[in-house]
Image (cartoon, rainbow, N blue to C red; front, side):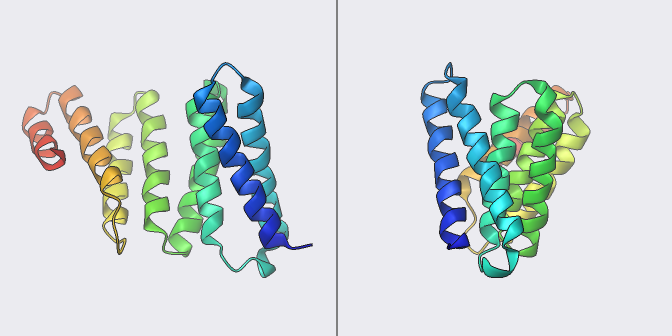
Length: 171
């Protein structure tokens, strides 16, 4: 009974089912299996915190689950998406996994945009930008995505000078 191996297996099974669902998004059983295994991974972690030496993996799974809820479930799952994005944010901050923190902020920004709250989305994106720059090897794709989203928000707000400034950075 190795909780680390079980956690890792659940995490990988969730990811495998999520990738299969992305290729075949009409098969909701695949999506539901991804959710099931991500939740099993999180539950395994919570039951075995003392024996799992890599708490950063929890923020990875929490981000994946938040993304799954936000991207592939009905809007009624937004609260779950936020719950797991906040878990990823908390755990990523505690373990200095700044890419995970930035991703969590990114998911929260997407939800804010979907709910027509551009100021909140902008705040999340700026927080994501601040966190990702703390990383020893910042993920350039995440940085580009942040600037692109900031540019789009500024354009929607008719703040063209700011939109151009952000656009120049990500181009």
